[in-house]
Amino acid sequence: MNIMKHNKETSVITKIKFLKICSRILKLYAWLIIITAAFSAILIVSGRVPNMPSWAGVMVMGGYIFIFVLIYTIALVADIVIRLLYPA
Image 1 (cartoon, rainbow, N blue to C red):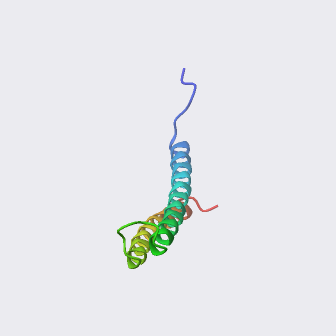
Image 2 (cartoon, rainbow, N blue to C red; image 1 turned 90 degrees about the vertical axis):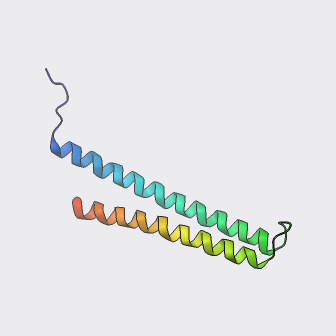
């Protein structure tokens, strides 16, 4: 006797929940990256990091901003996919 029936509807709902969780985790990760970037750039520009010119802080911040935008865009695409698959 099969206690848990595995049908297509529960599988789709499970995948949508997984996408929602992944999207939230990616957004959190992106925000953590941008906070780390701001902290790193402030330390570099203020001269607290030895052997690093102050303009390097701007370069570091630019690189981190690129990574932030990339990861956050992936999370937004996941949100759009969720809305298209399960409009509620």
